[in-house]
Length: 478
Image (cartoon, rainbow, N blue to C red; front, side, top):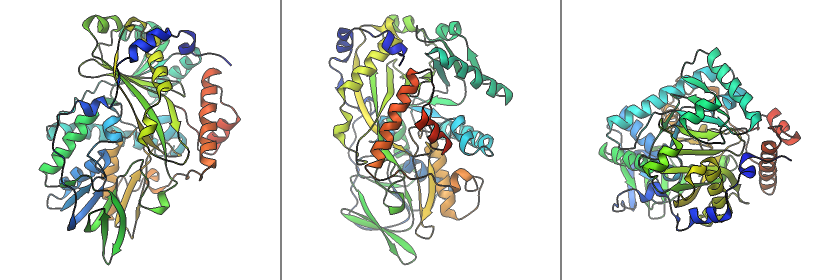
């Protein structure tokens, strides 16, 4: 088996240890928010036209879009902990236009719809930026695009195919950068070339986006109740009763925006698995450090490996560096203890210092992790239950920052009972295959992870397992 650039050029153990010394096990984006008082807990009996379970991006966008459609609608949002505390507050802040986890994944599943899906994704990203501006949300929105960088020789051909496909479709916003051009833009000795998608990605501050959305929906008249976990959804004649620990709400309609957490609908219990993703954040770079690596265009960056890294600059010039390890724990459990994984943080620190050797001596201020709601088709699925009174979306698989806004509109369309361009999509009408129960889930997921790592070490060549998954429509590449 071969080696990757990160194994061929590792920094010293002392440099890795120095970089992590003093790093807090805490989410930078949430620490960066001003303190606020907790919102009320739901108690007693309430009534609403629409109840939304979950105050992450999907839930908050649904509340905002619902009030945009009908300002008189009585909307309540119920959150088990605090608004934006989970995936919405701890992701990398990449807002990708793709609704299908990349064009290749969408093309393999919905070839007849992919051009429409791409167009809807860009329209949604444009709308997201407009909504952020309209509601005065200080989310540090930067429409800077993203670089896909090749770090291994076999990946260079993939760049050429990517650029050629974009050119054939007349997309003038996709640029192929040579080794010299990409290193002139961002100075890393690991880069062999890149594709710059110039309009399909924006960057945001995840915590400020969640906090700003929560403020905007409250200003629109929505009530958000925190520390109000929902335990059941009971039918109630022509409506639904949403039951929490200390109260209940009688409502006409419900949206489930519970992301990675176990679904309140039995039919969806096997549709996603939680896969843990890990992130480091540096201290702000000095002017000298920033000059040493360039990065004047401030693009988001990811590499082309199966086990890939993603990284970006914050507004105060910290580097967020995450990805590579994606860890599944037996039993589909979401637990705080899984967020502490020293071997992964050390590996990420090593890989950042290999990517940017000029930053030797840099310190990490924060390290954290979060669970991604992974589906077998690697993008969201949608549906309704309880005679059309309940709508849901889940399974975003790590690319939901922008796609949750599209999901909000889609769920509201489904609740309306009207046929729209969104509800007629095969992507919306179809369901992915469920994951098997344990122990088959753990065996299959971990065998796939091993196979993806092996492919990265063998020139991208996929083994029998990966080829079989590809043939079944279950394959994945980054």
